[in-house]
Amino acid sequence: MTYKERSKEIFQSEIAELEKVAEHIGDEMDRAVEMIFSCQGKLVIMGIGKTGIIGHKIASSLASTGTQAIFVNAAEAMHGDLGMIARQDIVMLVSNSGATAEILNVIAPLKNIGCTLIAMTGNTSSPLAKEVSLVLNTGVEQEACPLNLAPTTSTTAALVMGDALTICLMEKRQFKAENFAVYHPGGALGRQLLNRVKHRMTADLPKVYEDTPFKDIIYEVSNKRLGTTLVFDRQEHAVGIITDGDIRRAIQKYDDVKHLQAADFMTTSFKKIDQEAMLTEALAVMDVNNITTLAVTESAQSEHIVGIISIHHIIDFN
Image 1 (cartoon, rainbow, N blue to C red):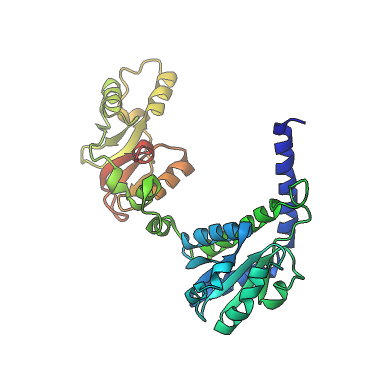
Image 2 (cartoon, helix red, strand yellow; image 1 turned 30 degrees about the horizontal axis):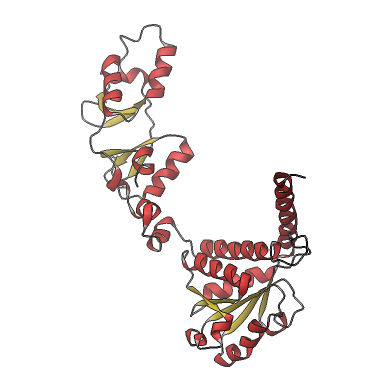
């Protein structure tokens, strides 16, 4: 067997185990989401070793999507880091075996603080499971490791369970792209999310009139390099749009295009977006309608066109 074939076999092994984990999810996930959503403090995720690394990732994902969450190493907790935890917090202890000494050692001190304890574990009959209010079951029958020793599938299961919890809480909070941007201000992603349509649109509109002849339309579409032009009436109201696709279809449809005017082949129903909308909203509209440009209006209540935005204005924004 080649390593390519073996790698695919390992993928399938982990996928099969994840499907079993998914089947075991019950009402405890509903309770976990409601408990964390209603928490007056923060969610503290605690683990050690490889499951601790997974716990750290889960805490980071939650924190970046609207849930106040931190990670505390279970061993460090016994040497002062318990001071980060308050009575109103929820602590989620992550341990595949549910018998890890460092995890079990913090239970009594945490109960002394008075916070709520929940667990993410692969053993629902473990000492850990018996000490907490709620258990998220990540139990797998077989690790991908051929010795069934190295944490592989079990850590994947914990990671995916953490993703499920994160996304459920995102949806519970109605977390939006602009909220996400607040926690991701750096880099290209942050700049894209934080900016609005007005920051990236061009006010130099490609513009023709209903009676503009075909050759002048081609010039305007080519000159402004947006692959489109808006069509206005003589009262300066935008009444249509012509794309380079419309031009190609007109050439195929008409034997003689020399006498065509904009009104003859423009599209009268075209998509618009408010200049105050987020760039992500503009991308979503483009994606749903399979288009690459949007006319930009002065406000959500106004039909006055103040600019045009292309997909390239957004994706080239680095």
